[in-house]
Structure formats: C-alpha cells, structure tokens
Length: 247
Image (cartoon, rainbow, N blue to C red; front, side):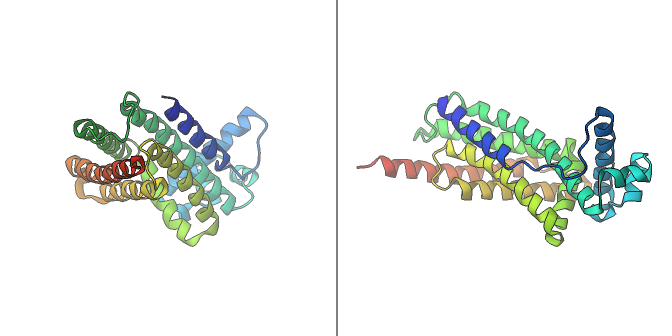
C-alpha cells in the first residue's frame, strides 16, 4: 500500500528530526564508548531500584564497577548523567515500539478501504488491533518490567526537573507521531487527539499492571477496553468519511 509506506516514512523522518541526543562527553574510541555505555547501563539499573534521585557519581561507579574518576570524566555533573541515562532508556523503549509498530501494521496491509462500512470487516480489524495492543502491554509488563519502572521514575522526575521534562516531552512526541501515523491510515479527522487518548490508555494500563497485587494482568479486561475505545474511534472515522463523501 503506497499510502501506508508514505505515511510511515513521514513519521520516521519526523521522529528522527526530534531524536533525543546524548549530552555527555563524546568518545572517539570503541573502548571509551563501551565504558561510557557501561556507566549509563549501571545508572539505569539504579533508577529501577532507587529512582532517579539514586543517581550519584559514587553510586553509579560502584554499580558499574569502574573508578569514580570515570563517571566524572564522561559526565561533567549529575544532571548530564541523568539526562544521558534517560536518553539510553528512550533508545531502548523506542526499539520495542518500532518492533511493535511493524507488527501492528501487518493486519491492515491487506485491507484496501480502512473506512469500510462492512461491519464484519471492521469488527475483525478492530479485534486484531485490540489484540495486538493487549499483547504489547503484556510483553512490556512481563519482559520489559524494568524499563516500565524506569519510565515511571523518569515521569515523576519530569515534574520536578525541567531538563528531564524537556526530554520526556520529546520522547512522548515521538510516540505520539507513531500513533498519529497509524490513525491517519483510518482517515481520522483528529489523529493527534485520538493518538493522545490511546497513548494515555497505554500508560494507565501499564501503571495498573505494575502496581497490581501478585502481578495479575487482566488480559480480557485490557483487550475489552482497547476494543471499546478503538470501536468508538472507528465509528467516528467511518461517519466522518461518509459525511465527506456526500454531495
């Protein structure tokens, strides 16, 4: 589908333009970059265990098993270390999102009319999308739990810290672009607003799964919630398409 490919490429370009960049000391040797990455991975583990405020040069050096001088060499201050730790988190998170996005596009590639009035066809598509979104949530909670915990820690820090607030806004914008791109395929007349609704649902459900007792994940409830919301969006999109087609 040419439209699918062009819309997807546009979103990729926009996301690339707003990419979150590392701020610490630039490295020119592979060994130096490896040590820098080791420090950031250690800082990210501390975020998962203690929150962002647990990041300190001495604590990170101990966790990374490197000399204290190494952390101060690559990062001039704690804020730069925190910023680059968030950037590492964002890179990891976007890798997961990109893989998921490709899978999400699969069920719609064979459908030529995404605003069809065919009830059975639309119901099948909605069911498939809700299923994929649910699987994404479950995979995040089961396989990427530490990443979700880090995200919650950074979201709280963004309230207090303007630097993280800016980086978090860039990260959310990239996620939003992915969803906007997807919703444009359905001829949504308000893709930005619809994307924010779905993204808010994803964040809320992820949080509820993280804090649930015994790690319970209500798969059926999650899928029903996504199906309900996507159905409402789908109805609105079909109605909009029908209205535009009328003389």
